[in-house]
Length: 190
Picture: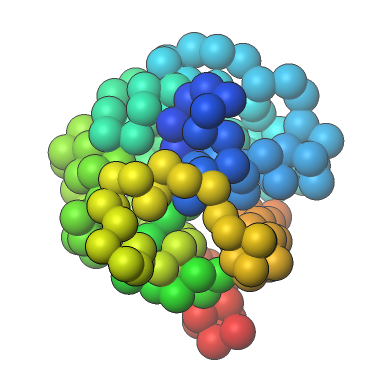
């Protein structure tokens, strides 16, 4: 069983913001796979897709970004998902808008959602896909920037990043012989 987790904030006000790009990838995968309706449990929204290789759970924590681990830990425990069988998708200020980076482990890098996950999972050794949103310019506060929508110029870049991130998740979760390291090497080079 695989668990794909998109980080974001619940509610209409946050739907298209930079901080919710992880949710957008999960929504893209749900659409591609014609997933059943999301269920609300474990302080999150999740759906289970049955593939020839087993189950894939798509999860959007509804705890708000800073408390994401409070949703992920109980769900992972309930479904007995091992740390190496999950991928977390989230926004990253340190990458240019639209650039993606896959990693098998790492620090939170100042991201509060990742801090919460690391604290609740008790490890930083889990797969992740970082989606670049760039840093604010002109003295804009980071908190205001991440909770704002993408500019018209950034829309095509982030749209492509969402597609690539979904492609990487598909390749990893749908192939019995493809390791996350192989997917990482392929998509980090693109």
